[in-house]
Image 1 (tube, rainbow, N blue to C red):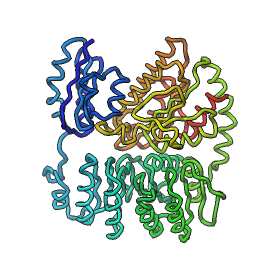
Image 2 (cartoon, rainbow, N blue to C red):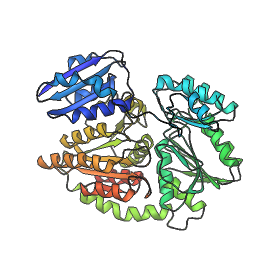
Image 3 (cartoon, rainbow, N blue to C red):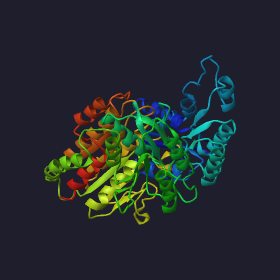
Image 4 (cartoon, helix red, strand yellow):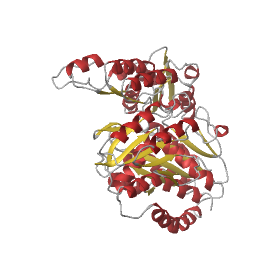
Length: 517
C-alpha cells in the first residue's frame, strides 16, 4: 500500500465539504483509507492512530488542509484531483421565489417577516454574522462553535438589551414555536418548557418526556458557556423569564453541566419567584434537599424528565419505580456479561457524540468504578486527556468537543471518527465494553444504526477472532416520529449484538456494573 499526503497551506474549507471529499475518495477502487482534515494537533494525532500521518502531515499547521490517501498503487493520482473533490458542494439554498440567497441581508429582504436566524459557519466568521442578525432585530441560534468568549459576552449583552435571544455559540438544539433548530427531534407540543446549556441534555430529557407522552412548549438552548462566571447566565435568565411569561408553559426545566455557583443561584432566584413548578438538573452538583418550595432538584437527565412528566400529570411509573425495576434485573445481567470477559479486559471506552451524555455517564461512573475515568471533558481537570491520546484506562471521549470538530463535521452528522475509534477498540485486548450514544432526529446522520452497526460488527468480529467477547452498550436518543425511526435504529444495533438501553444513564449504569462486579 502507498501512503501519500498533500498539505495545502492556508486553505480553509467547511467541514461538510471535507467530509464529502473524503467519502468520494474512499469510493475509488484501490483506496484503503483516506482523510481530508485541517492540520490541528488533535487531527494529526488521529491521523497517526489511523496510520495516515506522514512527515509532511506532521509539519502542517492548524490553518493548513491535510489530505492523506492510502491506496494499493498510484495514490498520487488521487491527490492531484483534490480540488475537484472539494468543489463538489451541496447546491445553494434557494428562496421560494427561486432566488439564490447568499447573505443574511438578502434573506431579510426576501422575507421581511423573518425574525429568527440559525447561523452555522466557521467560528472566526460566526460572531460577525450573529451581530448583523441581532442588529437587524432577529433572534439567533448560533450553532457554530470556536467563537471567542469575548464575542459571546458582547453578543448576549446586546441581545438581552434589545429583547432578543442569542442562543449559543455551540447551541446544538432548540425548539421555538414547534420548529426544531439545529439537532432536533420530532416532538409534540405540550406543557413543559426547557432552558438548557446542554444540547444533547435537552434532547435526552425531551425525548424521555415524549416516551411518557408529554410534549414541549418551548426549548431554549443557551450554549455550554452561558452559565460560566464570564457570561453570567445572560441567556439562561432571559430564557427562564420568557418561559415564566409563556401561558403554554406549566412546568419549567433547567438543564446544565456544572455551573458557576453564583450564576446558578442567580437563575434559581428567578425561578423561585415564579408560581410555576421548576425542575433543575445541573449534572454533578450536590443540593441539600431534593425539593425547595417550587424547585425540584434532580441528579440525572432521566430523573429530570420523569419528575417533570409527573408534575404535569403523567400517571405511569415514577422515577423511583423505573429505577427500582432496573436495579432488580441489571446486576444479574451485568454479572452474566462480566463472566464472558477475559481477565485482561478491564476498561470502558465511552465514545460520545453528545457532550452532556458523556458528562452524565462520568457522574454515574464516579460512584460505580474504583478506577479513574479519563476524558477530554472530565469531571476533574486532573483527569484530562489531550489531543486524542490513548491510555490503558477507562476513557470517556466527547467527540463533539471543539478539538474534534475543527475541520470535521459534528459526530452526529459524520460517523467516520467514531467508526475509527470503535474499530480500534475491537483490537485492544484491554477493552471490555464500548459505550455509545446514538442520537437521531432532524439534522443528524440519516442512518446511524446501519453505519455504526457495521463498525460494531467489525470490532466484535476482530475481538472474537482473538478469543475475546467485546460488549457494546448503547442508548438511542430519539422518538418514534424521527426520520430515522427509533425502533428501526434500535433494531439495527441489536442485530449486530449491541445491547440497547432505554436511557443514557441506564447504559452508563449497566456498563459500570459489568466492569466492577
